[in-house]
Image (cartoon, rainbow over the protein chains, first blue to last red):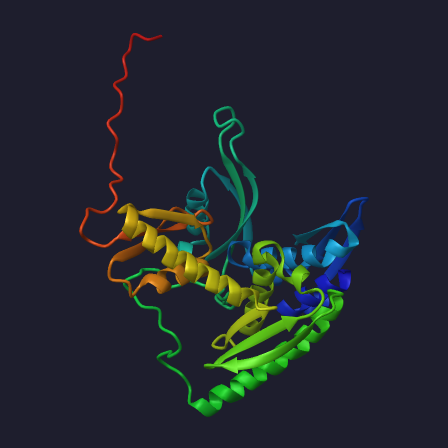
Length: 76
Length: 263
């Protein structure tokens, strides 16, 4: 699933090489921490957080099968 | 470089106004994300506070928005855009957009680990992606929320790759189509009820896209009118009788007088 997050974020940004995703796995949840170049922040978050919301919803759906709750956090 | 700040305030409006002054740009040029929201626990004890990250939208990012022309008096234009490039250019553009999406979707669906197939159609100058298969339900999500997210993500991707004029719809196992039919039926049924009862009716809160379907379905009906009330995401369509009666009376109710001596 980490691949999926990376794949989606890389498609959106101008500096795909600076995209770093790390995975923090808990018992019931997985958190994906996304780091992008500062100038790409807006491209990943979007107006009113719209893009970030889409990414979160998609990743959540993809993790349904694993039975864990997925969260995506975007960090600077 | 993009500058961003984190601002706190009581309302989003206030935060945006302050940030606009800070960045010295008009409010409309700002992008923002709400980081934390204190809903005012128990209403009175703690004041409502918002924490918002604000940055300047450099204009590069053009998020596709489903801003419909929402007024019922204004018919929704179906396909003709004013400055359409010649057909050849357009179909070439469509073909390139399709190729780009095809490439993306292949990797995307594989990484999502879902068992589905997808196909493209071109209809009235728009691209249509249809997804079907065993995991279709998972991709549709609760009330279609995952489907919506996928569609909006792909639209953003199109805009990012320079295909902002390419229209796109995504459907999974005919879900959108069914939804649209249901909404049209709901519109007609409710309109009938409004005429029968001579009383306006409020529909459930809907997304901009859903509301547009209702408005469009009833725009040619001479006996009812539609409009929306409330704020997103609680915005809902009201179906009302046309003319013949005063519009809904939202004016103040007379309040019971307050007396000072009831301590």
